[in-house]
Image (cartoon, rainbow, N blue to C red; front, side):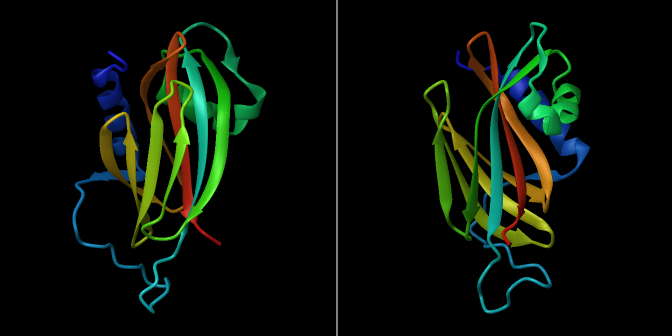
Length: 164
């Protein structure tokens, strides 16, 4: 099997309980813009800063180019001792727009901005046939993890903020 569903569920629950994101069920209702957001029917864009990380249980520490995420990675994934940055990209997405990236294990990740509600952006993620929706507080970070890769796993670090 390409990923450990129990590990994925534990990671998802851990970040849900840690704050900064809340799981939601997909719905046809479009989130309304928060107060201070555009009122002409437009929804504020988001900026998605995606970092693809290779986590391994073998000793190795946090690579220097991941120092900004190091504390969160080691706390969220305590059984992993090595974290290396594989790639990264920043996308600015208007409501309804999506972006995609091919991951190192050759699966495609697609993420779509579904709108804002209060200070939370709704982001839909689809990878390897699995689809989920996440509400993430403006300026916060969340992880999606569990896909096996080269003796470890791929961790996707998403930092989401209002597009400027």
